[in-house]
Amino acid sequence: MPKAAIDINNLPYADGDFFAFEQLLSAKEQDRLAEVREFLTREVRPIAVGCWNRAEFPMELIPKLAEIDLVSPVRRQGYSNLFAGILHAEATRADTSIATFMGVHDGLFTGSIEALASQEQQDAWLPEIYSLKKIGAFGLTEPLGGSDVAGGTRTTARRDGGKWILNGAKRWIGNATFSDWVVIYARDIEDNQVKGFLVDTKTEGYSAVKIENKISLRTVQNADITLDNVVVPEFFKLANANSFRDTNKVLKVTRLAVAWQAVGQQLAAFDVARRYAVERSQFGRPIASFQLIQHQLVQILGNAVSSMGMMVRLSQLEDAGEAKDEQSALAKAFTTARMRESVALGRSILGGNGIVTDFEMAKVFADAEAIYSYEGTHEINTLVTGRAITGISAIV
Image (cartoon, rainbow, N blue to C red; front, side, top):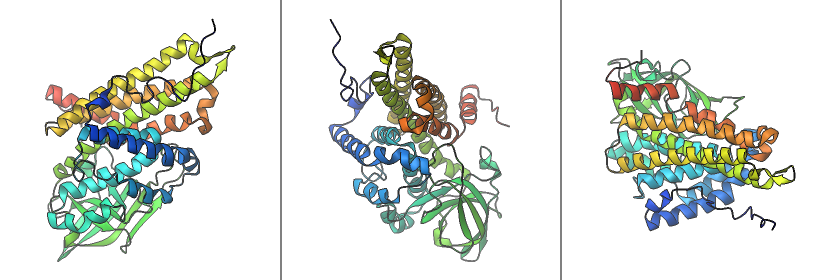
């Protein structure tokens, strides 16, 4: 008897959550996740490829993101870190660039204010940040400083009476071409410690120039920032950002968020590859009927599930206040390595169609490279973990 036709719009395990991790969320969180999923499906995924191809950010999306109210789900809205992680994975699944926009504004920028600003500063700044009336960026990486920026920050801060003078340059700063504010981390020339400052991007001496010709996260507006005697009032020096150890409080949490992005990328690869395998026929049959294709799909799913399992446990530890830096480092290294394999398998399943963005997979494949590198390279996160398990640092 002929096999029944497969309904490509109603495939089994549609959410890709093969081990039902989402059941660990509260009923309220599951309802909220469903609401955001519907928004992402309606408003984000349909425009993602076009924006990526043009390397343009959809500014018209910002009011819609404000309305769906995604900023600071844990601290402000009382959701769990597990929910926040799965939410970030879902945003990435729809479009890595928009998820990265939110990760910069919410995780890095807002996270810096929440963790390192005084209560008075938070009261003054956070309302407009939470409502997306003020868009933020995060300035840490420099043209000559990436992995070594902890001890090699070249941007300087000099106190001058009741103000600070900033000089230097930052690179790869997401959102910086249109952000209203940017948190700049600079080395105080007096005590040689890294401190944080909230800088108004309209301040004289501040400039941001878009980085062109990217092959990854093309929708994200990364910029080179120049700070030429930028004057920052004392009130805009983050009260509790007085060393790189303070900065690392932010990075530990955002490293966890990027590992969740690696989960979302794998789910996106699974979505696109499985649908294509069911729809695409060769030799008179859907290619999903061939053993090698099923093997590749299962490998993508297995990578995604193993990555998600690690992240679920790490998020639970974060909720309990027990997560460690080295655990975030291992998670980022492991999940992004699995992600790289998964998107490569997905691209392979699509064959030649996997190298054009018309079929989405080329965008998923290319965007994975940025995730693999930012928030600590695979190598640095591996060595952070290695130091934790041996007691010996291999980082020069």
